[in-house]
Amino acid sequence: MAFMNFKITSESANPTKTIVKARNFEMIIDEPESLGGKDEGANPVEFLLGAFAGCLNVVGHLVAKEMGFKLRKMNIDIDGDLNPAKFLGKPSDDRTGYVQINVSFNLETDADEDTLKEWLRLVEERCPISDNLRNPTPIKFNISKF
Image 1 (cartoon, one colour):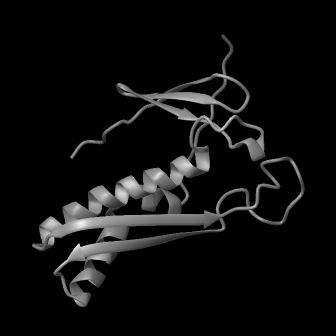
Image 2 (cartoon, helix red, strand yellow):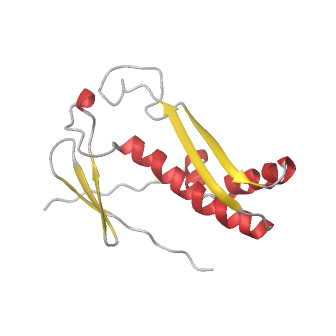
């Protein structure tokens, strides 16, 4: 299968608010008031968790179908702790991003425990966002002027 290219464009609406366009969709990213924003949208690290949940949902249903069982309902709760010190320009020994991300699935299914253990292994292995969070991904930065 050939590689697929995904792309977004964004524009700064103000120092904390970003308007992101992905295909025909628009997302507003902003910081909460406690971090200097106007709380007009989820912040970047919340969008990351949301993207993770969306990916786990798609892959979870795909894998369940392949394994031959039904997921009648799936709720995914994700949280993570991060120290905002470096983000705010303060010294810290902590990393800038999440220290740990916790994922909890609540499933309505008739699948047994062994089946669900294998399902979870495959979901973790096949979710692109999980892969990007677990493994370093090369990032190439470019800069230009208007």
